[in-house]
Amino acid sequence: MLRLGIAEADRMPELAAGLYDVLFGITVGDLASHLVAAFGLAADKAEVVANELIGLVIHPTLPRLLFGVEPLVDAMPEETRLAADVDLDEIRHLLRIVMPPPAAA
Image 1 (cartoon, rainbow, N blue to C red):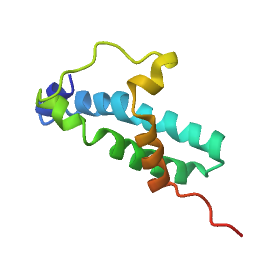
Image 2 (spheres, rainbow, N blue to C red):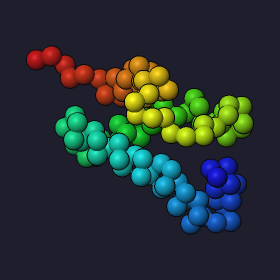
Image 3 (cartoon, rainbow, N blue to C red):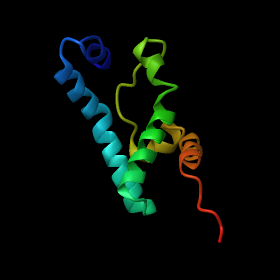
């Protein structure tokens, strides 16, 4: 679906924009809201951090999925198996890159 949206972006810009919003815009908004609630970030800073984090997390995998190098998953990981199905340590590492801990006073 993403490949179709990219391929048809020139012919159907509204469709491509809508697809982008569903796949990325809503995800960024949801993650930014979580960062505001969980870490007390300002909304504008949270959106920047969310975009950076999503880019770091999906960039290594998304092109491989788009070109069929890696297979797509059939279902979302179950929350109870999240630690086994998703590399949470890597995501935590990437979070520390885009949002380092505050300096000690």
